[in-house]
Structure formats: C-alpha cells, structure tokens
Image 1 (cartoon, one colour):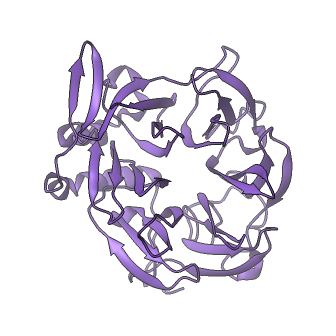
Image 2 (image 1 turned 120 degrees about the vertical axis):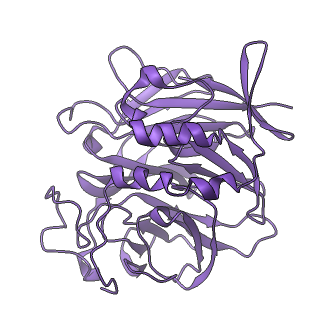
Amino acid sequence: MPSKKPLSVTRREFVKTAAATTAAVLAAPAIATESKSDSKIILGEGDHRYEVHHGWAQLPKEFEWQTTHNCTIDRDGLVYIIHEGRDNRRDHPTIFVFDGDGKYVRSFGNQFAGGAHGMDLREVDGEEFLYVTSYRPKMFAKLSLKGDEVWRRHAPMESGKYAAGEEADNHIYGQRDNFMPTNICFLPDGDFLLADGYGSFWIHRYDKDANWKSCWGGPGEGDNSFINPHGLWYDDRPGREPAVVVTDRVRHKLKYFTPEGEYLSTVEGFLLPCHFDLHGDTMLVPDLSSRVTILDKDNQPLAHLANFPDWQKQVDEKKLRTQPDTWQAGKFVHPHDACFDHEGNIIVTEWVEPGRVTKLTRLG
C-alpha cells in the first residue's frame, strides 16, 4: 500500500484532533450565532435562520436511542434515523422511521446492531430503497423502506485489499486491511461508491447489483489518498461540474474526484467533516466537532450553524458525548449526519449517548 507508515486512527482520536484546529476555525466567517426570541433558540442569520428543536424524534417506550448516526428522507417526507445499536442487544432495531412531526411510524434493522453506521436512499425503477453500511457486523445491504433485505455484501476480497477472513464478521478492527464501511453515494449511471472509512480507506465502485468493479484512494500522504474517508456524495448542484466529494475527515478537508478516482481539488476550513446532503445549490456538511456548515455552489460558507469555539473546546476536552446533563440548548456536541427535508428544514443526528435528533426549522 502507498502509505509509508500505519495510519490507525480511533474514533476518540478523531475528536481529539479538532482542538488542534481551533485557530483555523476562529479565522472562518462568524456568520452564525445563537439568539433567543420569545424563549425560542435561533441559529443562523439572513436567509439561513433556523429554530432549534432538540429531541424532535420521539421513540416509543419499548425502544431507546443508543448512538444516533445517520438520517435520510423519502419522497413522502418520512424521516429515517439509524443508530449504532449495541452488540448485546441484537433484538433491538437500528433503523427508525418518523413522520414529518417526529412521530414514530415503524422500525427494523436489528441485523446491523452493534455497528450500524451509514444510510442513504435511492430510487430504482420507481421504488425507493435504503442502502445501509455496518462495521460490526462488517457488511452493507440494500433494504426496502419496510426493512426487507434485498441483498447484503461483505468485503470485496477480489479487490486484493483485505486480509483473509474479512469477508465475514471477524471482529478485528483498526488495521488497514480490515473492512469497516461507513457510507455510500450514488452515481447517475446506476453504479454506487462505497467508502471503507474506518477500515482500508479505499473507495470501492459497484454496479447496480452490487458487483464489485474497481477501487481508488486508499491510505497515504498525497491528494489521492485519505485518513478516514468517512462520507461521500455525488455533487451535481446547478452551476457546478458534477464530481464526487469525499470527506478526508482527520485531515479536516473535502476532496473532489471524478467517479473513476482522478483527483480534482480540495476544500479547506473544516474540523471533522462527516457527510453531505444537497438542497438546490447548497450543500450541507455536518461536522463532528460541534457544528453544521451550509455551503453555496462555490463551496463558500453561507452559515456555520452553532459555531462556538469555546464550546467546541469544552466538548473535546471533557468528552461530553456521554454526559447529556451537560448538553446545552442551541449547541451541538457531535453532529454525525444532517439532511434537508423537502421544505429546506434540517435534521441533525449526533454521535452521542443516548443519542439526539434535532430538527432545525427554517425561518423566513
């Protein structure tokens, strides 16, 4: 592999790196603030102002949030939330569905319990499907919106990037020849890309039936390589040349590539960027270090929602993700994913225990 030395980074180390970039954050546009109006908490300014509703999605009493991870919304406006789940709670679902008011609709996905991670939605021949990644068990799968499994796949051993046994859930982690997929993005020709963000750092390309075709990226020091390619998206916003954008999370960057893996450009100025969503000509970037960023079509920040450097430092130093009594209204702890609904409101899911789902209702 092209790396000159092992690049083994734990999730705790991801968070620690944010503190080292505080100076860079202070130089970023301070265009999003917290304000209160008639006891309401508002984030943002101008055309990008949002009312904050923490704890928006409510579970029935027989379920519990464990570690909320990703979110997506179907064409009918139903919101899908995936949480990590616990390895010793295999009977507990990992995917929950809510209506537009945050009321529980259904749940499924106990096969991913212990390491459920990424989830996005694609329409195929008029029907919508969920594509889910899990790093324990090590697999990715296609599901109907009711939870029926269409197929599941494990490590692409034909790529030559993985140790023997990685085609199954062997519970070995932290080495570059492990398979620990994080997110999927969809290409216009029907193919999709899979980011092995916690494992090998390779980006794998599959056809529509999940047959492996090729890979690019991997660990290393150059523009074509990654340390934790956690999230990825096909950025086809109006006014831009379509390309694949990938979070090089530990390096605090977004990187653009062709679908074939040719490096194009880098966008600086992030902390620990996790994933993406698009709405019109704007792009949403949840950042694990306590904020959510909205970019215009030229990738200039329209808003850093909840950009409070002192709070970011406190979160990182005191490990507040497992201390819900310390969380403050209007401030994020660890946004792991965020998505727009059809009206331009934002759902934010945080990598915290016992989980938190926030709705940002757009004002104006």
